[in-house]
Image 1 (tube, helix red, strand yellow):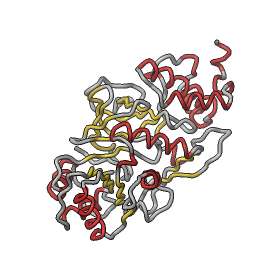
Image 2 (cartoon, one colour):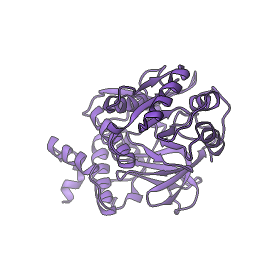
Image 3 (tube, one colour):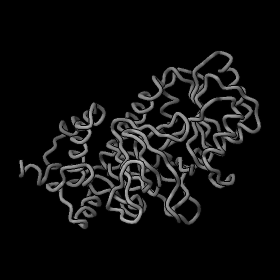
Image 4 (tube, helix red, strand yellow):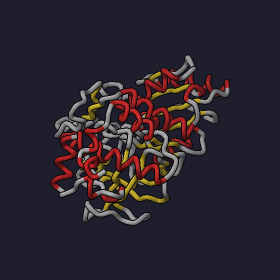
Length: 343
């Protein structure tokens, strides 16, 4: 066993990798999650060169890691300056973060697009049910106007899987979107309206809608179009404009291949293959107890061919085993397109 652990990832055959992927999406318990995390960590230590170098700088080796809390989390900025990818894999596509002129953009090299789509679909359907039952309306200006957006790719996959002919993308044609929403509401059709925050605010403030059968889901991001607002203020405007009781939210980012979802009040629920650990603001290699604020360390096991253990620039708190809140960002962090509005 000791010899096996010294180069664990190198011993995985193609069948072994497929089995590991299968285990990622069949986690049933905390023990399962811990086992898969340790397996993925060893695999990435052996095969993701950038992550291995980072771990060695911290004098960390898989032989010494027996708990999730001991696994090193790669600072998210590495995705801006290094190629974070399994050394024997190539990119099927590259997701790039949004950014203003002059900012270095993160690049996520995706070795298996099907794995990303499986992660997105499994997570959404775990929380909301079969995507085929929904009409999917994606209001994503700024994202549609640039290449390589992971959010656009996810929305496009949902639209293609939807059984509704009305599903589709909307850019600046808010009147057409309003008419579509009214028709769907009249039919009682289950609908997902997923949109960037500034565009949803434009829609809510300039159109009269009463959405009883529609999930309104904001993904964050003013993109320089409007002043920054706290989440409570945004959600109040959207609830009043759409005559709906709650506003849903999606937490995702370029560097992740999975999402967390909030069904209201800014509390995000995690799928079984993700977790959040909170690191100490003053000591980034230490963790804090549940309920305390700190930096968000994200475990995303779907990031199998890059790095599943990422220290983000988000601030938040863990409020239960599978729930967390986002309360803002570290000072001087880039403004990003994911859901990062402060509470």
